[in-house]
Length: 152
Image (cartoon, rainbow, N blue to C red; front, side, top):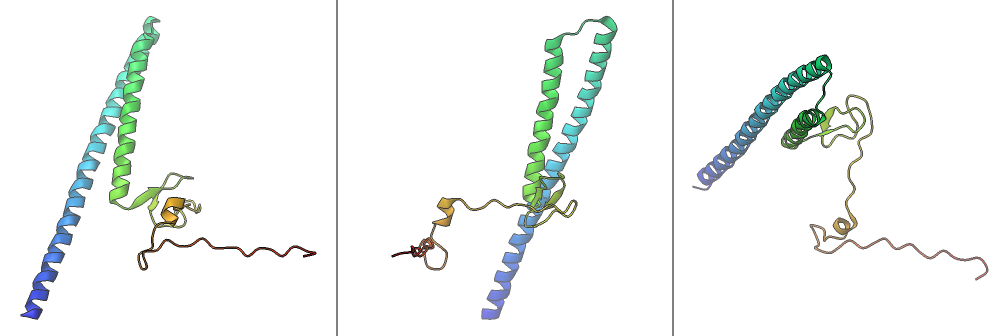
């Protein structure tokens, strides 16, 4: 019965992993659809903005409050796309190159597009003093030997 139990356990684990991956794919698809819808809305608002500017130029009357409202609406949509892109990056284990803006693997040392060295965040001092996984003791700071002073 031991082998059968192992087979059942492995099958359950595999099914759980497949379920998690399917859930991630669904989440990514939903985010991509939202991103597409927001980009469509941005295009529609740019068209509306262009028409507004055209009519304002023709009539010589520009309502700055309405113009500011239209611009703020577009800015809000761009902020939403940035949020969704960040969520997608997390799900896909990607980050953005700070030099060229291309997407790269989170564990990459260099950008595959521009070759820039990707700097990873260093652990904070609090994280450095946390117990390690094997001995549950905080690592000790390296002690530097005192330098001998001439004439002593």
